[in-house]
Length: 375
Image (cartoon, rainbow, N blue to C red; front, side, top):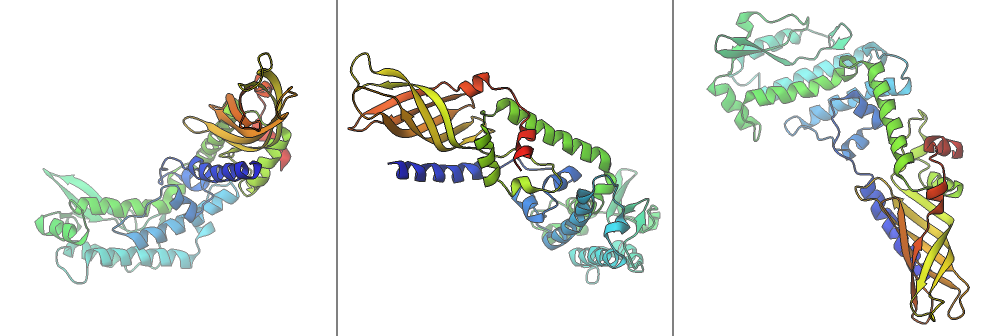
């Protein structure tokens, strides 16, 4: 029976671990989100990053270039990143080339006449050899707009950052919007497409547009708040529990920057406790007893909306009839209440409630320090 129950608990642990690590979608425009996911493209995808459907390859390329900047600040958060520190002249040329190629591809600048004014502005960008840097901010070719009378005019930004002349601005008329709705599936008009293209471009300057020191401090505060929540709300763990959890999540806790987050699951091994056990098949006067319990292996999903966990447990009490040792499962609810069932042999099953004495009398410790001490 114990082997069977161990199989159950391991299966539950894996399924719950996957569930517990899910999080709400991140705002991919924030430098904090890049840092929080260790500047890792695959982790960003797993946390909800979605590439723009109209510019998938370009969005992927720009995101990966932004992650180069992310790693520059992630490795040394005491510095403010400078574009030329992490992008070489060849990188800047390559980024500009991809930026202009995507513009040409998206709006068929060499084949159609709907964007003749845009084509003229595009041509002056082609004389640039590298991506312009102005006031420390990388400046890819993007779209801008200005109100004019009762309408809005659009134009391609300049390499110098200066506004376009009136002759270099264009209104969006029926033929332009028809091109955009035909070329880009589900697009309402060209404005929506322009905005999508600009949003991708802004990733290149995410660490310059936001104050790096403030972002880092905010990130540290977020991580510390998570540990405070873990200390306040999670179930008490013994030294063995902490060591076991640290070993299972050793990759999670091995980050060199030391800005680690609490484990998604608390894990338990060889954890003793007292329980109040009721065995209905026992003679009168022997049905209710205080017993000793040992959680062999278990988990607690401490941060779910309704926290819960399960442990494989053995319960011992010296009874006049039946086996002294029973085996079963303990269930943990809301980080504060535990109960379980144990098989006592001959078809007899007991129900017990865990006193959780360590939760009642244990101090609210700094869990971050405890986990750091184990590593």
